[in-house]
Amino acid sequence: MGWVALKMLTGDRAKYLGLVFGVAFASMLMSHQVSIFCGLMLRTASQILDVRDAGIWICDPELQTVDEIKPLAATDLYRVRSVPGVRWAARLSKALGRIRTADGRYRTAIVMGLDDDSFAGAPQQMLLGSWHDLRRPDGVILDDAGFSYLFPGEPVALGKTLEMNDRRVVVVGICRVAAPFQTFPVMYCRYSQALQYVPNERNTLGFIVADAVPGADPREVCRRISERTRLAAYDARSFAWLTIGYTMRSTGIPVNFGITVALGFIVGTAIAGQTFYLFTLENLKQFGALKAMGVTNKRILVMILLQAGVVGGLGYALGMGAASVFFEVTKDIYHLRGFFLPWQVAIGTAGSVVVIMFLASVVSIRRVWTLEPAIVFK
Amino acid sequence: MQVLHGVDVEVAPGEITLLVGPSGCGKTTLISIVAGLLEPTSGDVRIFDRRLGDLRGDALVAFRARMIGFVFQQYNLLPALTAAENACLPLLVQGRRRSDAIREARELLAAVGLGGKADARPAQLSGGQQQRVAIARALVHRPRLLVCDEPTAALDADSGRTVMELLRRVSLDADRAVIVVTHDSRVYGYGDRIIEMGDGRVTGVSAAADFRESHS
Image (cartoon, rainbow over the protein chains, first blue to last red):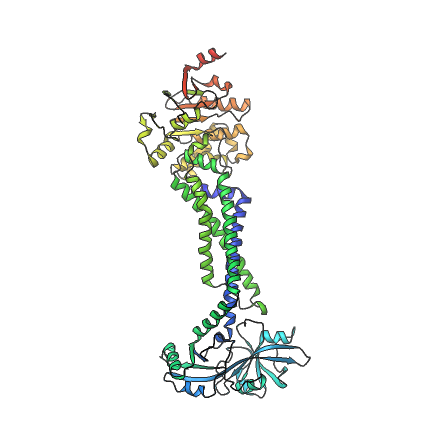
């Protein structure tokens, strides 16, 4: 009888397509918006995630996000290095500075000052040049998106001269980094240079990045650092979550995205539910005839659930396909990059579609379940 | 509300029994009970020595699926299925393979004069043709009781005649009883016995010839 259920479902093309596209719309809206939300949250932690050679971040204990920096004392670096279990520790500064091109165009940039000796936190994916070239006088590395903002339409190239805080800088490398929350260029230079490129306070040490000795538990090393230095120490993942948590608590982003996702769910349920119920109502006499002919309620339940499953499956596939196409098409557009469809979102959306189709079919099931087969004689 | 009062009728196999009476007299309730679609508050229905009251739930449904065929006033064909697919439904309900069921349905459609329309959808068929598909559907699983509710009410005179001749033909099977509920006086000529109803009671049972004579 499954075959009959599918024939009944696909027989009315308009309603069938309406059902499928209703679910597809809901799937796409939910998965797209949740993915964008996840992408935005990851963007807030992009500078943390880009530093892959240091597992531990040390900062002021009151710090709530990577963007809200209270500089440490220069001596804190040595205190951290003295903690047992710390393999190495290096300075890292992060600040905003203004880059100007020779023709007067300017952009605010994220300036990452890397330890002059170790270059800890250097970009991992170099498109042109090498981070070793940061040793050259005035040498900086710029991310490819930043290059396109400053030199729109030009192919990435080394040797471009820029100005920062009345000082000349030369692009010696082009890298690719995770998209930052704001569409600022990301520039890497030596720590000593960074102090000259951005306005300074008395203390200049934004962060200390460190790594644990092999075999040591980074969380245990973090605990020891905090205990001995009274500074905050996080493993990279916890620090990223600290930043993401701050953004979620202090902005309207989660609420507004949540509303959109809820609307997707409600609209999807309403469209699918209403259309499915109408479909059932129009076929009520046929269901009655099937019951009269000896189809049991259990078989009709299976038939309706099969119809709901097919609609849900197709709608989900189309919705996820549309969302995937969006992320695939936009992955190389600088201001849209960094967004992707996490597998957890795909699973969550599938769960939501199951709930939508269950809610949509439960009313229909109830109607058919209680249907007296004698209706066929009325 | 009590709809039927003291109804006691017997329907014999090998003949067509017409159930006639004004609207609201209880004809539909009676055939619903006879077909096992409604449960009587009191009394008993026996179909070929089997008491329907002894059957419950899935057993009753299975008995209905095996023993009873239905022809409805509005045909109740599934619009998404072809004539052959519609006609094979009772066999599918009984768990037969689809290909076998459709083959048997095609043979029956040919027997009712619709061999060339087996792949047509209901919307592509006239009312009379749809009713013949419905009759094929009602017969495909060889039921012993055929219950027809106003089978000619939605048809023109020619189509009605064709449908009743078809029912006449299938009722010749000595092992099958046919009950036809009707308002249509043109149908009276096809019955063997006529049960008259009024106000939920059987007001008369007569041979069709006597009935026609008394109403002429």
